[in-house]
Length: 178
Image (tube, rainbow, N blue to C red; front, side):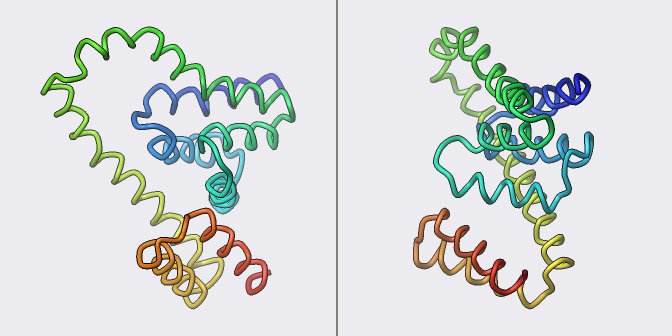
């Protein structure tokens, strides 16, 4: 139990330290820790937690941390995972606030930020591909294509809020894949 709490702390603290760009940027890092390194859940379970977290209001990383922590070690696990997710940002904000205000308009800082964005995009693309691959093998090509096409149409063409698209995909899965 104590070892699980330590691993939970590390699984969320490390992505919080090295992740730059908020929740969406650290999701692939959390996935590596939770699914691959510590094997708290499968990729499919992680995808379900991610979908559920996206459907709810608020920061995605803290919702995922709370849920995964609870699944691994109950209420104490949830608190440990939440603390591990929040502590890096809290400490960084306290320590770096003055420094950031001083250099926020610096061309070097703006260039550094613009160079980090493609890395985050690649990490998110890899995560999306892994979910697509898992979906393809678990649900089949027909259901996967239907969900991808409908999601694209609803999100990009009809501008429907992602939470509604996620709920619709969950309903589709409940009806056709259960």
